[in-house]
Image 1 (cartoon, helix red, strand yellow):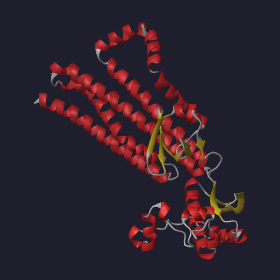
Image 2: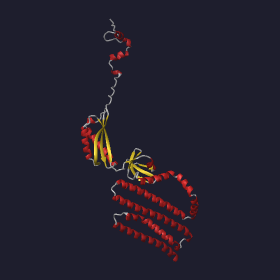
Image 3: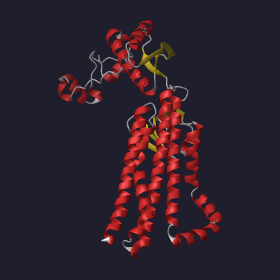
Image 4: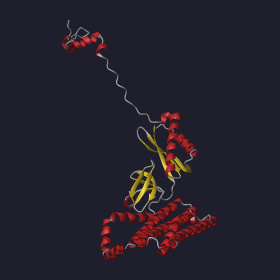
Amino acid sequence: MEDVLRPVIVVGGAVAITLLVGWAVDRGLRRADVRHPETPLWGLLRRALPPMQVALCAALLRGSYPHARVAEGYAQDLARLLSLSLIGATAWLVVRIVSAVVESSYSRYAASTRDPARVRRVRTQVTLIQRVVTWVVAVVAIAAMLLTFPAMRTFGTSMLASAGLIGIVAGIAAQSALGNLFAGLQIAFGDMVRIGDTVVVNDQWGIVEEITLTFITVKTWDERRWTMPVSYFTNQPFENWSRGGAEKTGTVYFQLDHSAPIEKMREKLGEIVRSLDTWDGRDWNLLVTDTTPSTIEVRALVTAADSGTVWTARCQVREQMILWLREEHPYALPHIATAPAALPQPSDASLPDQRRRREQEPEHALAHPGGLTKQGAEHGHGSG
């Protein structure tokens, strides 16, 4: 009877303590979240309850397992398994706690800052910090798991003697990866590009969707994703439309006839712009910017809150202005002259009989209508 009760008490007690502690911590976090609604930290920490319970249960079982006296022939293997579970759950718990603290700090900063550029910069830095912490914790956890095996301890001791040489070789072999790693840190803390920035890369504009330690994903206007190494943004020039503010100025060009009513077009542009929801109210203008022997170039200018909105505003101005010119002033639109269509040649059957006979007769037999032969007419001699 004792052999049955002992493992039940050990395992059941560990599980019961784990559930009790988890319930108490969850209840305390709920109360703290209700008392401090302006701080999202307590609600975010609740996501760390599962790894905390796994780590606690593994620790309790690891400490009390020798007293259970179950499967004593496999005691060493089971102890190692519990140790591995404890290390993995602890790493999981650390990552969840760090993520909760970082996300809470970012949320409070975003709520108290009105500058979108600074918010995007902090978001980029926070994302990369989370990734760095995750990788460091994962590496430490894997190293700790390997050290639980006696063979790996001996291997690790022998490897320390040649760690310098191995580090040099690994650095040369992973030169590209390390370059991208340091480039990612440079982008995060150098404020070169941020998540949510509008950039132009290879004549394609898009929005930075994701930044990692090795690559950057750009979402184009047609919902394609460009994935490129972060070293590209540190070695190649690119346009960042979100630097210095998100406001943008858009231009629309018209090729018109010289008789175009410029003043009326300027008045119409004002009406169109004031009716647009995409116009931010800063500025608009219309000017003649160039001329050619056949047309003039007219530039319409409109401002908007960001790059996506300015694109829509440009399209709306172009569409409404062309429609107004076509209906009210069609003479202002350029006219393209086309060559007249070639007339069809008459067939041989449609020629008059006399003309057909003349074409069929030899040249010397053709007589001039005035009584001269063709040769005589050319030399001015008559037949009579």
